[in-house]
Image (tube, rainbow over all chains, first blue to last red; front, side, top):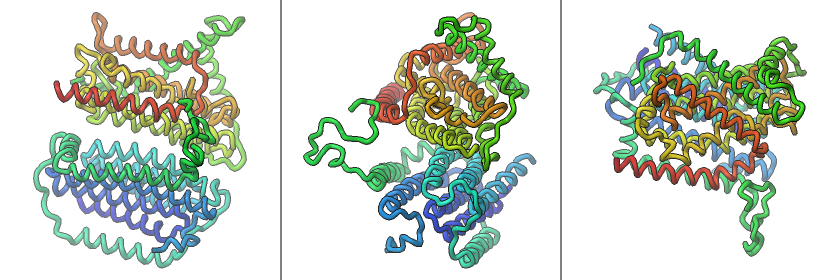
Length: 101
Length: 187
Length: 310
């Protein structure tokens, strides 16, 4: 076990999550990809805390931040899907193209 | 080394579960594959010596995925997964991008001259985290608190289709809110 | 500091938990037998859970078309496993199977596995009624979890530690139940809620033909119904180190006091259960948010002030 192994696992999670977030048409599945990516971020932050700077707490704070972001992302995501579904009975990204900025 | 074995098992389950999320046809299975993956992330965080954060990840992700399953079944077109289907677009491009990103990160990870370990961990990392969040990192904590509060308000606003005029009448004078589902306090 | 339990304790724990669950179920059956005139005798009632368990062991498994067998079985197995894992941090006198630094959070995390478990068990058989049961438990979980977490937090706050043995140690002289009655009451309310039993048995309600358990028979049913007794025993047992001073008491050794107090809490829950109707979750949800959460927050404020001035 060393830093590189943990980071590689984190990068793999991030990559798989990115694939999901890019390919999935359903907003809910897309959010699952985002969750996986954030899981990778959490793992990387914890590994860097353990192997590089265990004396400082910044790595831990980053994990807390990522966990909170996951919760916020889920809640807002589901709320948007619910609102979207109410308005036009779709939950696919392709059919909500006008949400583009 | 048992720790090494644990790491390899957890890492394999985490990545494997992550891959299966996008391969399962059944929405319930996809959700719980994601839960497995994230639980393994929690396990690895515990392996790194962050007991509190690891267990909190397990706790939070279990609740999140249990609720996510409801939304999956509610919104997806083949909830039970009785027929194989694909709901993907731009698969090739995404695969190229992801492989590229992964290779880039992997080469960075392998090639970067990582600094040696500086200092030792606190005896009780949980306490250190708490004191840091209530001390130097107070601003982070307060921002998180406000963000969570804003999330609660925003989610309710987005998800509900009934406003206060629906509940309390046009002049907001109704004595009892007109709710479709009565609550337990008898208002 | 409690001594580390020997390794065999990990094997004894599930057995002990099962015995306690059978005893609790027998007590419940005796009370139920008394309630109906002309019911079975005390002996027949007391052995009813064991006989029912044996019957289920021998019964054939029911299968449903296009069921998601894998997920359903994972869910069923997870119910007793979650109970045993949660009970691992309960100290028996001075000894506990595991005493992690974050014991309270561990208990919480393991008991939340029941959310996933019941939903999966409801999802598995591909039946509408059992899925309704699973959904009901999720709604129930959302209702009980927040006050429950606050109650756990308050006990940790009073002891200034998340390690269960230190929570017990902090109650030398004064049990937490004396100065945290609201937290104790909230905890007791959520104990039957998380084991979806008694007044919180809506997920397995009769109106949906048994809810999450509707399609299960044989071993599957035994796992689900026995698992919830295990969960109930585990949560009742955990209230002892949290609020009732753990193994502290005169004369008797620590493990005996733990056992006595656990039995008392269980008996109280079982007796009170007969006086309460089954709750619908939207009702409990509003009650939890409007009454229990503010109450628990006030209790937390009080405890925090006491701790700061100690």
